[in-house]
Length: 220
Image 1 (cartoon, rainbow, N blue to C red):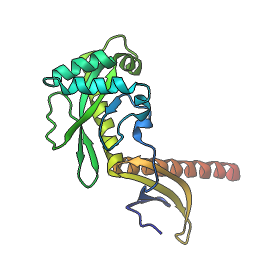
Image 2: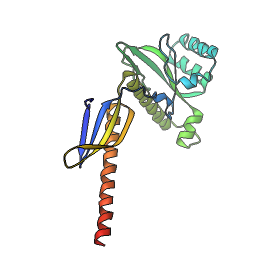
Image 3: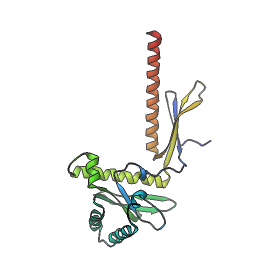
Image 4: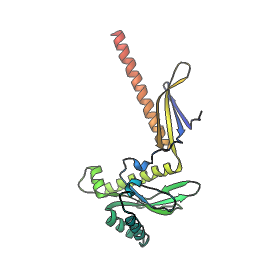
């Protein structure tokens, strides 16, 4: 039996968090605001389904164009023209005993030893739809940047194997557990802990409501 990385117990329920060793879906298949384009000689990274919509020649042209740019400002202009991007962040890959990916938003520096591997961007149409607005303000751009940074962080957790599953059990009088909930594919321990706590809180609330209804039936 696997040992749990972390155990959360309260009010007769116990959540056990394990490292998820299954072949989990990539977070890039989730409902993301950003689109991630990467190129690498040995790894297939980023939005695979998105890449399938572009011809091989266009991908190569885009890579050549960005590599020949003098600075990130010129790269941004190419991406705006080629993909209709509005908010764009560079991606850096660190390949040493495993893969990690990072980016940075405006006003920050990468501060991280990694090779440039692509970019993540959001289009005007997607941003307007996401926020139900008619124009993109500076404040909205900042929000989008933060979302893209978080998407990269989540994807890096996936690449690093920082992925977890959990079970939630109800304990009987002997301390034995019956599994009520089991899920996997959570990137980052904090994400798994948050979901476990949410599930336990829901089960505790449900049990109290059932007890209250039963008492009402018995005692009128």
